[in-house]
Image (cartoon, rainbow, N blue to C red):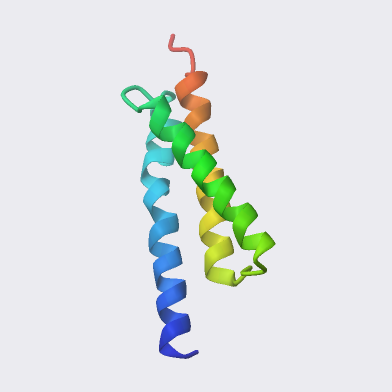
Amino acid sequence: MDIVSFCGWAGAVCFTLCGLPQAITCVKTGNGVGLSRAFLWLWLFGEIFMLVYAIYQLKMDGPLMLNLIMNIFFVLIIMRYVYFPRKTA
């Protein structure tokens, strides 16, 4: 693996992990209190548009696909708890 590939994978993993702590917090607390819905929608649409662009441009390399798909997954988890918080007893 050359240095450019390593940087691509390292960057993709770092960007992918950015959403993980918030997704874990939402799952643990059962809600997404304090999170901006506008931020989440912009994040989701940004990831989807970038995925479409990457597929259309045939730039479907591993690091980029990992980043886009995992971020879509994390933002959907977070949005679930923002819009449908778990009921507390």
